[in-house]
Length: 109
Picture (cartoon, rainbow, N blue to C red):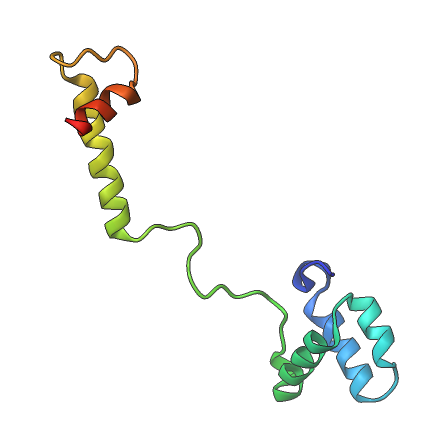
């Protein structure tokens, strides 16, 4: 399948191809080969183009931020890391390096 269309073409290039298709100057199969997209994606683009040709854009718009954690998950992670840090800094616990088996045994008890 194709790469992301907004990385391969500019808005004006795609507008020109869509207008050529609407004017019946270019056949569908040639446009699909040039854009390297399938029929369903092409007709979705064409539908958007026909709604408002002058404002048509293939720019990708994110709906939400990427790579973020919800505040409660981040709070829980920080709590767990703080708990483990206190274990490692406690002079009464014989941990010279991070010791999963000691923590496992501690939790088991």
